[in-house]
Length: 210
Image (cartoon, rainbow, N blue to C red; front, side, top):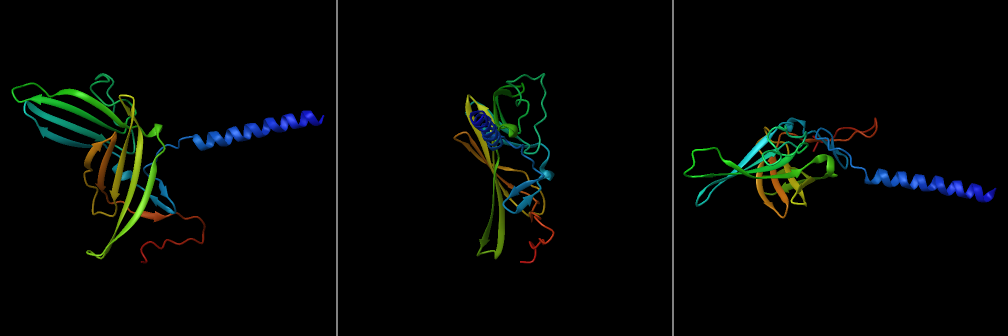
């Protein structure tokens, strides 16, 4: 009888451990309207649209154009009739489309590369909030850094590191700094600010006191 009880106890403990492992490895979907960093919370839902950013390079034979399509909140619009080699994959949040047009060509630019960089459902996001005091301007610059990934290109994992400069007069266009080592670096001035997470009825919102 004791052996039977020990056996079932071991089975129960095994299932509990397996459940805890699943909880630890599960990926929570990225919610741009509810980003929690420590005791701070951020709502970036005003950015919920596609933000195209083009980088043009004049070369010896023609013009190279890389257009980054960006929407951190929802997947980009997808047109299945275009085909995989002409548009971003379905479910993508950030991708790069590279085109080339020769100087002597009267036709449309030719798509030569499509690169998936971020697919939020496949990557656990990382968020970091910081305050930097400026001795020159005598103010505080607040930034929110978010690392997103889930994209893949030529079997290599891709990601984007986005630094948001908070509390700006309006949401400006994202500034693509560089793409290097499968990582896209973006700086983005936005109007959103953070607030304190209310953990109990006795918590007060003290952000603007100081």
